Image (tube, rainbow, N blue to C red; front, side, top):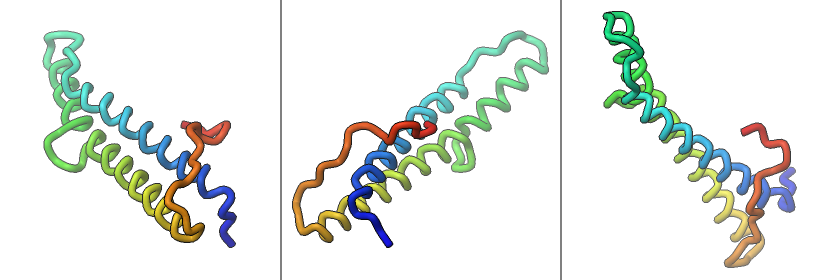
Length: 105
């Protein structure tokens, strides 16, 4: 069964996780522009490969995956928010500002 008293905190936790994913996606995007530690072929190739893995133009890179994960978490939080409003027959919800204590992100 669903404990409706805990849904607002679940929404806050999902939103916090989405923000975390977005912040990590921005870091991944910056990895595409890191300077090479040297001018040798191995260093230049490593920077190129890291940049592609982190933020290539395709959809199978770290930044795109993190952005997609954040969108999914936000969408889920929004659906929960709307479902809870409908269930409680209210227009506004009291969603906590902080994630659950000990949330590991």
